[in-house]
Image (cartoon, rainbow, N blue to C red; front, side):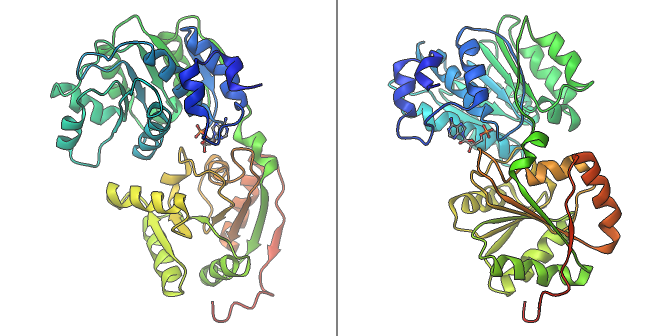
Length: 380
Ligand code: AMP
């Protein structure tokens, strides 16, 4: 199957050349034609499936056939739960949008940064990727108008509702015209998302692609039994001995993320932390450096385990296990993505062993706990 057989027009196909997108991913094959046909979509899919391009490409195609919208009147609105996902999603629109004969301006807006520059930059924006809270502030201050929205995307709807964005979402939906195309993507169709999908979507095309749990077979999982005070040296030993070029390390607290990062640095390993106590600028910059390969280790709390897409990430290390088995799957799902296999390593202290068994049971997969006593960690 090729992109040209999905109904995308010549300018979009031209924008695709030169990118690493040779063939469509399964979700793109399923999503692009009905979006081009103006249908509503209910997509059950995770980040990593390629869903962003699945909606971005046909949206750009539909909009590039029209003249520019009235200034500050948004045509396509994409709502996302986190700042990182807002930036990442806008990047996909910008990457392809910049190559079109009629330039379509896309912008990401999110909280955590000053609102004034966003208000100024809102000039001539046609596609807006936003977290709900900041969007409402911009609407209230009349920096942006939503009455002409033709296409609405709710991305990671389950996460948005879990994070308590229901009220803000309803407020935004009230601003939108009744007649528009609605695309809803969610990792699950739980009790929260189901009713919203039924209210919002009209005769939707339902699309479901393989879940991360099923994808797990791609990932090589290893676990080491290790005393808590040997976790730091073991982490550094593994990174150096296995010559890991790019590693995402998960800790369970902000404090631990900072402590692990400091220790890596004092041992000469380039590392930075991202978590909720970092400024938005710091988080974006660390992520950028990590994605471009300028940073070897990114230490993160679970904030980074959902939504963030780092293509071809070879290693994920759980310095500490997450509380929920679902988060474990999301964490290790950062590797083995875009059909590239990766390694996930967990450092399991005696106090975590029981919990690790629960995780394996939920995941439906056994991961042998290997002894780490024989590793000589002196000097690490
Ligand atoms: P997403 O689920 O949208 O975050 O996409 C996951 C990753 O797959 C991103 O790094 C995309 O750049 C990449 N990707 C999406 N579609 C394709 C494609 N057709 N060919 C190659 N890479 C793709």
